[in-house]
Length: 146
Image (cartoon, rainbow, N blue to C red; front, side):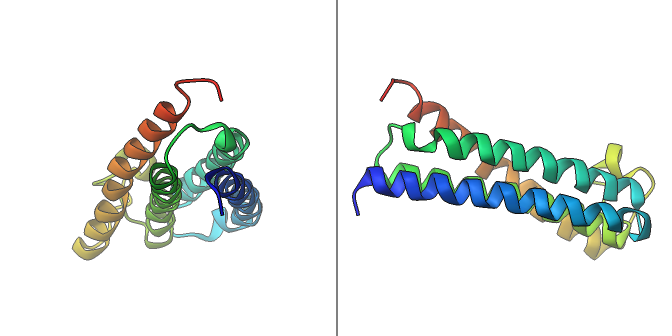
């Protein structure tokens, strides 16, 4: 498979994940009142909708990236990981009523056990460098017109 086909396939996968996040957002809306931390539940709802829009937009421009096969594959997987990791951290916070140490604005007073706070911190903080690298690669891939 050549690089153009791989980019087109990855772009299509990003569209699929984006739409799947919209579906998740729709169902998660019903869970907001019953999770342990409803304010974090609302944050999950909003974050997954935003990520859905982001992945759909990136899926549409993905075939235009001017990157090597290794770089575009790295950007794809780092982007997927960063997106799902931060969402998972917020979901865990909402379900456990935890996360005040990592995301105090969203969690408020929702403070979990040491294990819970550490797990959320590890997952959330791991999404930052992977997301930054993915966006830097995407930015670099858009530096010239195809």
